[in-house]
Length: 239
Length: 52
Image (spheres, each protein chain N blue to C red):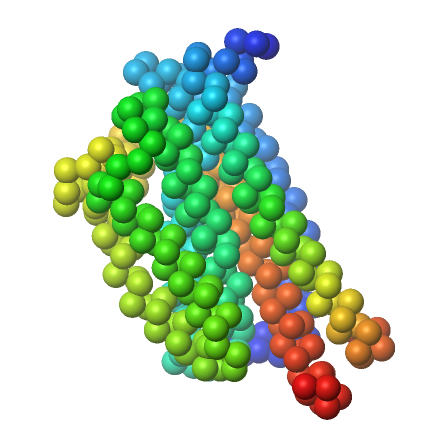
């Protein structure tokens, strides 16, 4: 792990892996979209509106998965002072925010024809909205504190406090009566969704995951160079 | 073809969902790539171009 604490090693390795990740992500998402629109059957109740699922559900997975990545990075940065961990947490936040936004908007557009409303302050929707606010607050905190070491510490605390929201999102559909349906993929007793709909969903989910890592590496490279730039300017005496 | 785009009457909801998702995700990729290109150029200018 400490091998990559050297910025040069990280930049070289990341640049080498990234094109493969972008390629793989494009391939998976293209395949997932094809399956979602041409291979997956229409739902007997929801008809074609069910196709929104193939972008909504993977976005929802990413919104929580990226928060988990941020939380792990925050702990590593906090406990081991690994410089790349702070960089990773900071770089991940806008990606998580983007997927959470996509999740909320597509959910809203799916809710209108199926539930008769674009928005309802029920447990699932509200807790995902709180997740979105957590991402925005996290990004704002990084921007508000100029010293990166202090910013990383404050942001890590916010991130780790916000972790409590993740199980709330996960179990909101079981703990409260909500409009939202309960989990149908990641269940203890196995998926209840039909395989013909499950596999395009998983392909899209995998595609979004690889895409997120590609984008994370790209944003981390940006942040590493940003820090070098700051150091160069200080050395040049320009401030 | 028209039938495909109609999505059984749910065309507006389906295509707006996918359109917005694409716009947000591709938008973030574009912004991120531009930020990388910018900072890379600035570092290069200060260092004399011997770094990635």
